Image (tube, rainbow, N blue to C red; front, side, top):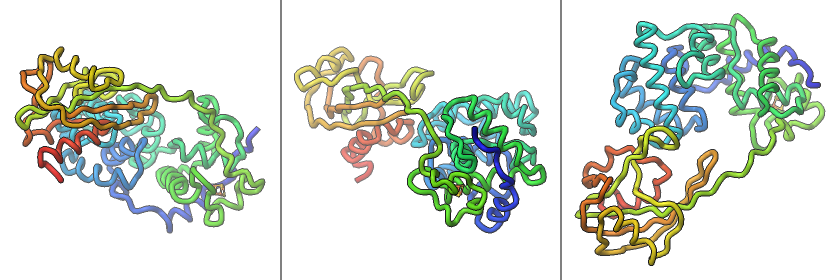
Length: 352
Ligand code: SF4
């Protein structure tokens, strides 16, 4: 059985008051800014998020602007952050706030949880930081810190264990400074109680209270059961050019990368002899096969191994859209195709 958490709030808050990170969404306690930043930070590092965050806030400074933005612009603002359903859910939630809450951000953890794309962690972060509600915000950082502090050896991927950790955090959360406490845990997890390699226990304000430090097991914790291996999908991708225009195709709504633009592709790895058949099916005639290159992209559950063919064609292309060279940047093309896109842009002289 893990130990309950020791009284961590006083040393943690004292440390936070002098060591907290300066981040663009901190300070004003604007729920919109906190919400957008927390959604962007899921799966993405702080340093990578900051430029996206600034660009987003310039284009969409409030809930009303987000609710009204065109899908293509929304996707463009999100392009590169991955997991596009998060951007769509942000807009869905903004519409709910405009339609059902009169444009006012919901103020409680329970109401925030009803918004599309808002889970336990995000609701806790917004409610505690913007509205001072005494609720925890338990993410991977907090699970790790709690597991180490209490020498918890159960699998933190197990929902029942997560529920227990949440209760442990609730028991030590100071009602007078819930937002600062949650942000202090975020900062401690990001800068001291690090996930990979040895945590920096000598710099930790909680070192005297930490069970894992006392018994030398910090690096073994938290325990996570291994995930099943990723599925591998092979694709043959066509980088089709016709008079300086590039063939694109829109993915079906829903599912992986739904609604975004992509280079046409077919399943499997086709060799040079086989690669012409799909072009014929699209009503295209190859006039110059130029080069072949490979790329790979890893999603959470699947890995794409892609073989790309650059080919100049004649024909109209059934089901395809030919983007003019000067308009290519307007199409939201997922980063999975980034290597190919870079080559196409270089070839067309859009960038060197
Ligand atoms: Fe993490 Fe070390 Fe601090 Fe324990 S003492 S909470 S393991 S950094």
